[in-house]
Image (cartoon, rainbow, N blue to C red):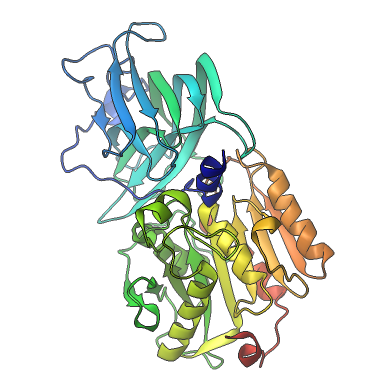
Length: 454
């Protein structure tokens, strides 16, 4: 399953771009439901040509939507998704949307699920706010747990999970998604509001509530060294207009999922809520040199190339660093890269090559594959890793990364969190902690800029 694993190792797993329908059937408020199931037609028994209340996501080549009138958990119907092509991105879904009035701080979702040769499906909960504000969390994962594991086949089985609702959320979408090849059926889907968790209201070290309302995203849409395919978004956060004495500190962000520009609202919140003053955040937008590249590897690297690529992500990172430095002063001692899910492998590859402008790496919920890194220089490098023990990506990847870096003379830290694959709990406080660790353990001295830049 080489092609399947490449797509999986590219990790279109987290924070996929929102597909906002122009017309959405909004459901009743929580107060009107009085604690019952928020979803209409939970068993998919009602409807004419389509199941009542359920909406189809975007059309994806190789994916078949079906209102299966012959297969059901208790009744005779269910919602089916079948994918026949070896690709993971983009996902598509059956979904319903709910109005959220700000009262409930969590959502509990459960469903009966049947699978046939299924590699990957999820129950996704998406949060929509003012303007283009969007984020999501997975409530449940269905499928192969690791890249070497076979697809799953099982009869009806309950999957469930609870997610925190970010402050400012106006609508909540419950989405039944398929990513990888195989067939999945969903039935008896239930969603209920829950009380706030302690972590949702926890304040970070800077005294800012992690779930504070988001502001409109503000960034510059730039091209590194005037190359159209090397696009990045420069977020200034809440830092000073006048550059700090030693220059701005720089965080490069490689998002998970499809690595698209739609992550700008979330990355903007990182800039404003997770970083101290004096930081710039450069959000790289994954290049799409060809259809083959888009379908195989989100962030192609020297060790994991993709058809149609014209440059590696390592080169892209270096070009962005050079481009930002041409625009404003940068403190070369504090140039960090952060990547999650599909964005993790290229961050490892760029931070652990022999010559790099990066002085630290932050990787969350991802894999570590030394065989895909022809250059592996770990001495004097700093790597901060976040991973959940219940992530479908085995913990051994995070543990191997820390063991490899620390064992080779570098500095590495592994922080575990609850909730599985995705950002959970005090998201921006957790990111703030990781960046703080990198600052405290920075190993590159002032004046190393010329020696490390290419």
